[in-house]
Amino acid sequence: MKRLLVFLLLLQIFLVYSQNDRFIYEVHYKKDSTNVEMINENYNLDVNPEGITYYNRIYYINDSIYNNTKHYGFKGYRLTSFLSHKNKNSFYENYEYIGDVNFYKIDESVDMQWKILDSTKSINELKLQKAETNFGGRKWVAWFAQEIPISYGPYKFNGLPGLIVELYDTRKNYVFKLIKNEKTPKNYESFTLSGIKAKAIITNYKKLNNLKLELYQSPFKYVFNGGLSIPEGKKLQLEDGTILTKEQLKPAEKNERIKIKSFNNPLELDKAIIYPN
Image (cartoon, rainbow, N blue to C red; front, side, top):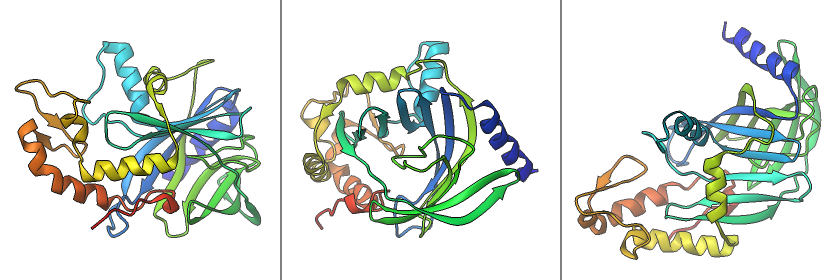
């Protein structure tokens, strides 16, 4: 039954593909390389004639809830990094969230050198071909479908003669699987992402890394410096669900540094921050 369901989903993708599509990837990854636990999330790859946007599906859920209720946010909603790419440009627009009150925009060229292999496999009637590349300090294996003529895949992976259906690094720290296809309205753009883009601060990786180190030294600096105010009687909820009063922030810094340091396994391993002891 599971094989049949996967086949029907992928067959639907092939039959209804147009220039305004959303491809949904199930992503399994290790946030901490020393931990066996895998985190599971879904990401959207929105494709239109101008380019692509890749983002956590929680933004789509937030948009949907707001359209129906006019309320912003929901339990489990959080800010995460995302990216976009215009076909006419050679670079990706990375919108990086590092845990403070701002998003930071970095433009970056991504030129992947693929080795396309003779190996093929089929998910029932959908033929996939194997390819390999080195990117971000990892070796990657991709299975792409030439029947779906889109030269993109999850995250920044691009340049193959067909949509990437499966992708993983050789240590299986990051695994992407295409699970669903949806249609999007012409010229669709997430209002949540649009608002973030408008306020993003332009920077580069060197400056961003310095900001990450500053945030490690003072995890709640955005509260202490007035960047985020906590009204009297209110509390701050952290990404892991921890709830703190303003008075509890300073004593909680040590534990927050431990949590920041445990994220030692980013997708682009060669961009991992080396935090002080």
